[in-house]
Image (cartoon, rainbow, N blue to C red):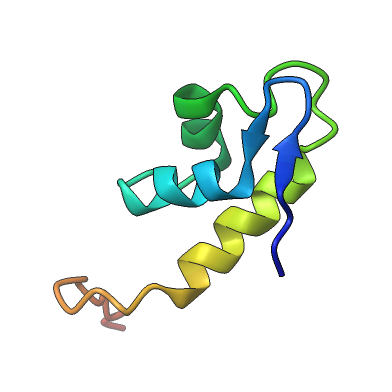
Length: 72
């Protein structure tokens, strides 16, 4: 679902947020820092959270991630 303009206060579109995620941002805080989206009135923060969550869910699993086993 395309959301178009996400942050009206700072004129940040979903396309800009996705581009920032593709460049390596991994949290709403990093999106805020890079684009200023969600840093004025804050009404768009839930939408930004959702975009970040949806993006991260689609990323492939990191094969280098270490699995910790509980040795009891």
